Length: 160
Image (cartoon, rainbow, N blue to C red; front, side, top):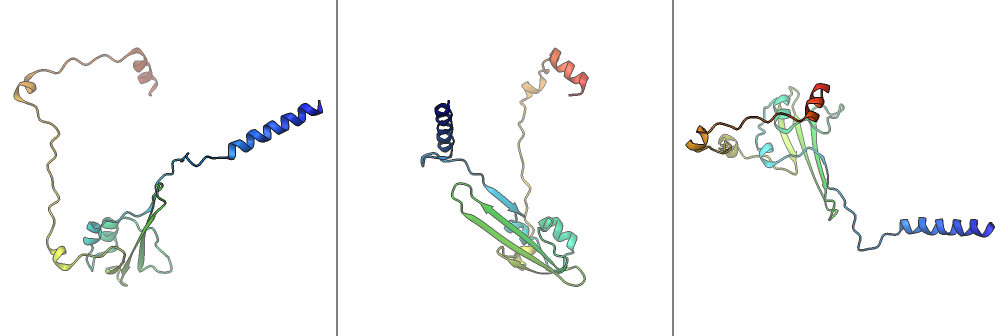
């Protein structure tokens, strides 16, 4: 009896120890972690001195850090961790306002636009073709709609 208990404890210890070992050729999946505000150069290029807090919030989004002790300063922080290479890309943009709540200056990793870039608006409209019908295809009627299955009708009656 004692030998069987000892054998059971030894076998279970070996199995538990085997679960903690990972061979080098097995690579687990590691996710990409993106945190903070994603800011592009185009977004920062729209900032102009004298804009209100609401206009800046509309362009850049809600700041990640709005300190109550520094109410004239908003910090936009971005951090991206690549899951495969473990490389970290981090950016920081700080927006300063004057006492009246107007944009005064911008500091950070993303450069603000020049005056020439601000005066010329960019045309960002584009035409998206969702598919066009030929004259022959437009004249043919659509096939009749299929009746839902019994299961679908029961689920619809129940509200699902």
